[in-house]
Length: 112
Length: 116
Image 1 (cartoon, rainbow over the protein chains, first blue to last red):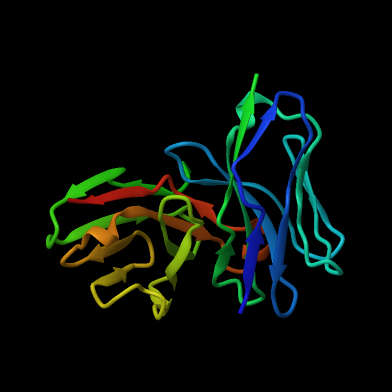
Image 2: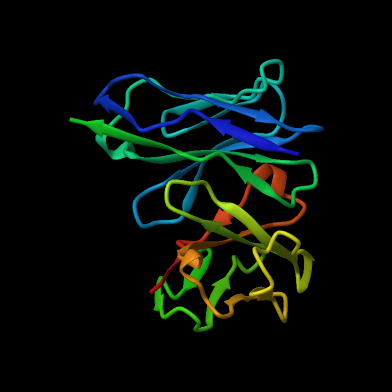
């Protein structure tokens, strides 16, 4: 079945450092891929998405490119801020649109 | 529209009691989903509705779990005879149906259940 494997955390970076959180997936057909962010005590917020191969999703300085050849959707940001500290989830939505699958999440802490 | 609303935000209950959570989705969304999230894990799919029809419920964790969406608007998730292992965050999400692949799911803030 469909699944997502995410880089284990926690990740601790200094402000303005470069961020990469790896995400790979297993799926049949042509899934859509998402990154969600969860701040303490809150629900998940959609960060960015890509619906087909080679699409690049971007938002708030974060980017991820849908790579079908490597079945990956790695999250990157060139210069992180303290306010980016949160848990990041990679997610996959299969072609049936009925069951979004999530990775285990990666906790990011950015220190001033 | 204020997004997906879940109530209560927190619930503490004694083992063996029944609990019910409510979710109000975005009004123009016809799909509604329930997930469970335990500490340090990603959300785990439980069930979903299209309008009032529950189209997938095989992933509900046991027969103690049930969900309804009687008029295709708000939904309730009930857990009967709660156990300590039911302690988790219960998340609700909604999506616009045909536009789901493009827009993803919109999540509520969740209900945190603690069974003592």
